[in-house]
Length: 107
Ligand code: FES
Image (tube, rainbow, N blue to C red; front, side):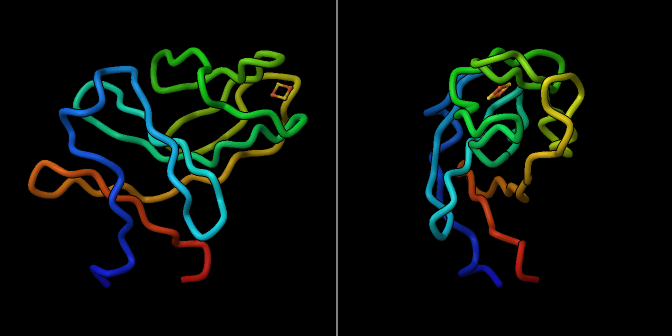
C-alpha cells in the first residue's frame, strides 16, 4: 500500500555516494545513493553492532567503518570478515523526484 512507504528525501538532496538515515518503526535504516540508484540497508553491522554510517561505498558495497566488514548494498550479504551474517535490506522507491523506503519485514 502506498501509505506504507516512508519519505526519505528529494533525489537532489543527496549526492552520489551520499546518504540519509531514517527511522523505520524503530529500526535505523541507511539510505545510500549510488549513481542514479538508491539502496536501503539496516544501519547496524552484524559483526559488532556498529553503525554503517560513513562507511566507504564502492561498487555497490559498503564497508563498516569500525573493522572493515563489507556488505552488498542490494542484498545485505556479508562479503568479507569479520562479519558473516547479512544485514537487512529494504525496498526503495523513487517517485516524482522523491525517495521512499518501506518496511517489508512483516509482509
Ligand atoms: S562492527 Fe562492523 S566490522 Fe566490526
